[in-house]
Length: 483
Length: 149
Image (tube, rainbow over all chains, first blue to last red; front, top):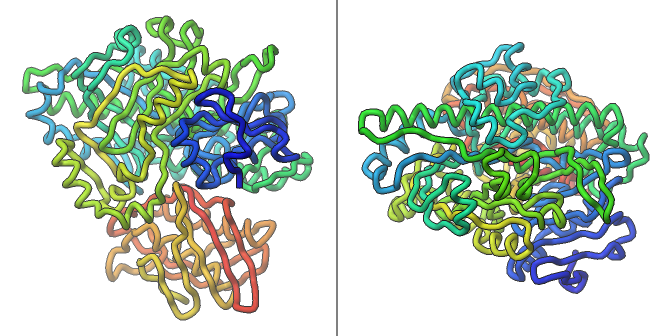
């Protein structure tokens, strides 16, 4: 186990495990954390997993852990690894089973007080219209040809069907469509699993929240993002559902057959990988992009359902039901990007698993209205506590391959959380705090109890302290919809 | 054939299963006298974990499942992933399982699928290689598997 004695403190919020720590490390590992979060990270296997990630062929710079890091399977959740596209590998386990799990933020023109009399009705209607829970299908059943189009077109597919606007696509990472996706590389099984899952939240830590902005921390960026104190916003957290899970499963199995042929020796089987330039690596990359596109279309469809619900509930009240898209960003993905490593420009595949892209002001991939302040980063807290909107920084480009944190990060197992509180009691407690909760499963609710997560404020302090994002706005929930 | 009720630690005639505690994921540890029982038990334990309930008195649909892999650990992962896939596309829960043939790299089984009365409360996305174990000692056969949820 890695201990504090093995770490070198680089700055108040940056810690390094030198390459000399273990003979098979190709690069050092870095952890962005407060003292409190570092101590938490050292309690489980997350840092050991980070060291394992530092052994992957073609990794450049550092293997990086975000402040919300926690133990994953093979690769830590809250980890970033950039692989040289010429010499490096691609690893499904370093991207995650829920490919393009991510977050979307929609902003209303309403103040929280205006919406208050309608909140209970709105929460019930959102729960009914935005399908959540395991095995709960959605309104859209995709035939084979349509499924292939969703996989290759992403959120653009939604535009043709009136489920998206041009403005939505402009305010989505990669415009909601990652080029290079190939539906032919996605198995029939993966497509079968997702046939009725477009426009569904799923279960676990996925949710749809109605929030109010309680604090503006960066007025210039908030103005650019169209956010103001007291405003009602909607946060959607979900991914590629069964399709992404099956793509990951399929390619972990595929890579297991060839990993030895490529002479790759792994410290953990869950880090299964293949060279990016190999046929197998290229096939997975094309399938992973297709799954990412499905997730963009999924969140876009959910946004359309949320808009429809706002319209249905508020249409007769005289209140403005409009929801404008602020941004949509992935936190489980592999992206080809150019970064500067030791003064050299390198094209890398940045694996972000539980980490969010955080591009700085001036980056050409940002929509023109945000380019002067940086990319919005959406950080959901634990249920019933605050979430944050951050903005990307130049520091993130220099230090973390344009990446930052993705959430609060678990610190308690689901079993322990479930033993600590009953879902019904938690629901009552949240109701007393003025949060309308609609959940399909009381057990699932208990497992996502706020005390099972790290304090999101500590995570925000660490990313700001390390200069890999800056806080723009703080959000607090008014209604939580969960599977 | 072994049936498997829902609680987190269960003892049935031929195997025991217990829940494995992990920060973000969840898993099971199973023990049995034979590999056939071990693999059947792991499957039923996985579905017990999901908390899904079958429609009472519903007629079971038997499904034949056959999986090949390179070693006993991969076989366990592939076997459970196969059942997860069936569960998700058929909207069924598997409450009984008979392993009819087993070798370190192959498994043949019949599972009984019953329609879901309520959706599962725990969504298992996939079966992982993380902390994966299949081993035999003088006390019998043991397996450990972690699920991504």
